[in-house]
Image (tube, rainbow, N blue to C red; front, top):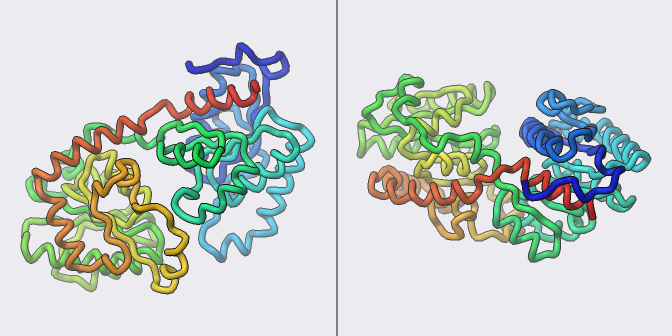
Length: 389
């Protein structure tokens, strides 16, 4: 273990850690972190806001985590009084009973404000999972620097960014790397999904939100239509993120009766495991495809007005995590006006090429090992160093 509690004063041997996680992924990270902190501080107490996985580790949640899990624009606005009340309660509680550290897990719009208020009161503050400040609206780094004593990042290039801006930071690795098999079984995945094992498969992933599917779904199916003209053996598979997206995609697919598309609900990792290549909307899906060592074509479109407003604030040269990790155009990215049926079809044909796939798989394995660290233990050791200062 990189550090221990040996050099801490007696009152820090049994510390209280206040943690706020706002969604299911944060609950998973929080439970892992609690287990790791217990190994350093066996008598520590954990409280704040968390979900069932954290509670199973002995965590005391003062509010239901799902009250923080809001999406879109309308729902957060409708729930604003409740969210503000919860945040005030957390700030008031930990100003009065100062914990050894306050740890905000993701949900930056909610947790960073708490961190700022407690930091000003002398509480050691930690933020786990960097917001995408390195990619756009980099001016936010000034507020982060005034709010946190330690940033825990999932990706190595994020650590570099914070070091450049003088923010204490530790790269802890990405938990997905420990959750996805390093040896995907493509044939077994196809059998499980009722696909023909000996025919190529393109998995199509147009996004998890309704707006994404509206913009990307029809485009991707037009690409499938084009690909079928030159490869009649190609099978198409689409995992819908939830029941609403399933209905939405079913309506889009119905407009292409000549296409035989297998539409399933959820099971996105299994759908990618079954694939020879993946055509996807940019996001975490690209990281999952990389960890499964699947060639991919990354694409994304926004409404024209939205794109014009957002584009000046984007500072990163790449849109997808594989390219950001490699610091080069490892997989094709076709964004906005570049996302045409012709360009996407040509890129998918290249991705399906077996020789190209073998070279890419080797590079993906290197990136896999780069981000596969014991995240909880690495984070806990860094927090231990922080509170012993």
